[in-house]
Every structure is written in structure tokens, then in C-alpha cells.
Length: 182
Image 1 (spheres, rainbow, N blue to C red):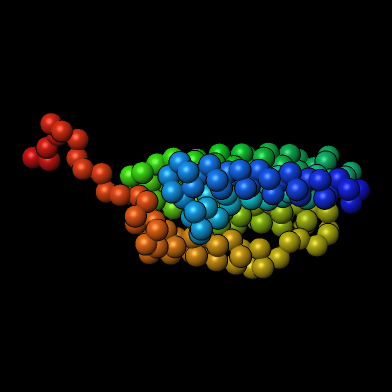
Image 2 (image 1 turned 60 degrees about the vertical axis):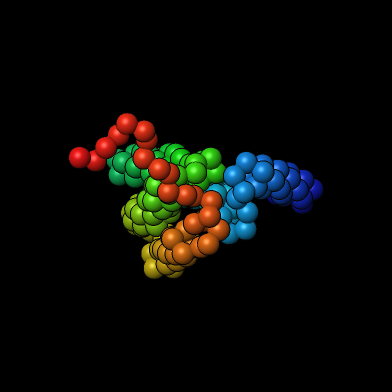
């Protein structure tokens, strides 16, 4: 890849990240570790998922006979579905963290993190293993691929439930007037 293109793309991504950081900080006082979680869900997760699909396409390009296998269609369709699900859930989790104020926002975004990162990653690694078996090529390591995603989800969850900034940003909203829990 052309180094000038890579440098310009990296600068553009850095500019977008800086603009989003400033916007979220002004909007809801989101900064620091919380911004990393939001930007990870909004930007890093979709980029990583699209790179995973790129891996499948590269395998199919190197082994054209695999595209004739009925298992390829099943695996590729499942990978596309998982990618779309992960991107949608990740963006949902990031946007509710960026725009919400209720304490339930933290719980919903934590569920989105767990679904979009380690669960989808594990399912995708199972699919990648099947595709690698079809081509007799090396599959991505299951344990090496699962542990970082699991670690990220654990760290993000611990941060969301123990951070003072998160407690101050997402408050428990009072019940609506006229509603009772009788």
C-alpha cells in the first residue's frame, strides 16, 4: 500500500477521533476512559469486523476452489451476518453511551460490548476455523483470538461499573410523575 495514502488516512482518522472526542466532551462531559470505550464501539469495532471479512475474502481469493463448496456459502453468509450484527450492536452501544444520561445506559451498553466483542469474535473464529479447514490453510488461533476480546470486555465492564466519572455522568433518573410502583 502506498505510504502517502496510509499517512493521509491515519491523519484523517486521527482528525475524526479528535473531533468526536471534543463533541462528546462538550455534549455530555465524556472524556478519558469513557471516550475510549465510546470510540472503540463506534470506530474500532467496525474496522476490525470489516478486516475479518477481508481475511475471508483473501482466503477465497487464494483458494478459488473453496468458493464452489456449499460450506463456503454458509460460512461466508454467517460471517457477514455476524459482522453486521456486531457493527450494529457496537454502534448502538457507543451512541447510547455518548448521548444517554440514565444509569440504565451503562447496563445496556455493557450488554452491547459483550455481544459485539467477545461473543461475535468467538463465533467468527469458529467460522474462520471451518474456512481454514476447507482450504487446508492455517486458521487464526482460537485462544489467541478470544482472549484479547474477552480481556477488553472485562476491562470495559469493570470501568463502566466502578469509575467515578461514569457514576457522575450517568445518574439515576427520578421516576416519572404520576407513575407508581403499587
